[in-house]
Image 1: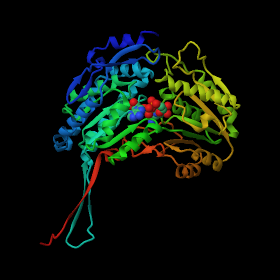
Image 2: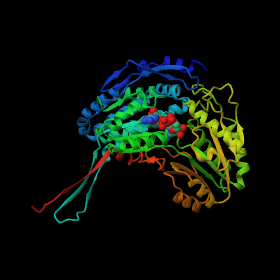
Image 3: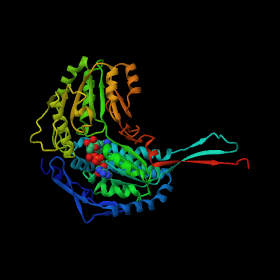
Image 4: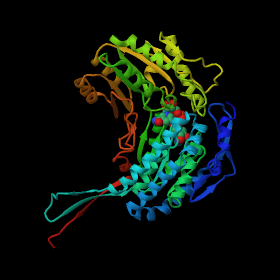
Length: 492
Ligand code: NAD
């Protein structure tokens, strides 16, 4: 598989998609120093990107501020038209963008294509939302007064985005910010800068004005410091680990920025013994192995009621045995490499810990020969609450199955986590589904489905899984301020 990603990148018609130059104030910056971009499957260098520094970020903040007035004064319909054009260019270039995503992130090409469509969908959604930021008129509590609430753009926004959805996590944030009338500066993950920069080229072609969208690559700590301390940055949106989210929240406190955080998950997946086992297995396969398990919605604790425990684990093992690990650009691949070797190491640690504490381990393939970033799809059964995998997020293709007896018991175990992003419940009982959906402490709940994300839903978590919501009609609120205006003395 050596050279596969490099060959695909070399064959791209859009050579500018692999230039690796950053976009600052309407100019493409090569920078004196460059950082490598590697194919995570092989560790081979496939491109290099500009290494921007703090001074570049300061320039970008000034450029964003300069662009703000003209952008916010455009009619919402005109901002929406630019967003729709950007989405349409993404769809036109879907194949090239997908190759970039797979080349630097590693996910199978079919999933990368899906991500481009998913990402374009956020731009289309927010193009429409731009025209729906209505505000309110409040029945007055004072004689002769008219009370209005307006929604206004907050100012310059910044986004720090992850490597697992390197395109969609940018459009979900930038679509909302631009629709609201805010310029945004994006700092993508260093592992996946090429797709971010390619999408920025399409934004420019769609008519996003100079300074309104900028994409800056480089060292995360060096680039985030000016963002955090500058009072002109009014909103900060982050997707990534809870650990970094905490640091950014702390850093943003000094200038009291509006912060939205989409952090780690540790999703419980509850399966009761009244379900169709085949449907539950299909749900678990989707919720565990999509994006090779590198998904904050991934099922991390699969609780199965004892009556069907044996039959369920056998059926799940049979499905896992069908999964094929390999390079994301090979058409037969279901599971690609982990984008970061550190994520693969965490998976290995969790597998060893579970095995040492008595879990049964079933792997579809042998890891040997695949390379350090690969984890063969693995089933851990008889997992107990004291094992690492039951206590922390995995972010890889390792399915942990835990038996349970009663609804009361499994609800308490599902809620016994500081994470609260997504949860899944499979049951044929409507009453039980209603009870659990009410009492489970998670921001998003799938009942008898493992597929629920998309532009119309409020994506976000409870507890230490985050703050605020992305997508839906609420997503745009992260980039807006309410203004209350009281008109008095109307009687004259
Ligand atoms: P991370 O939080 O370190 O990286 C996410 C983003 O934050 C990247 O853009 C990175 O460059 C930036 N970043 C890192 N350190 C920073 C700092 N000190 N200041 C400012 N920005 C910083 O995530 P990771 O280490 O690459 O992945 C580790 C774990 O995080 C994963 O195993 C997973 O549990 C979680 N994660 C979650 C998501 C999600 O979708 N919620 C995405 C990626 C990672």
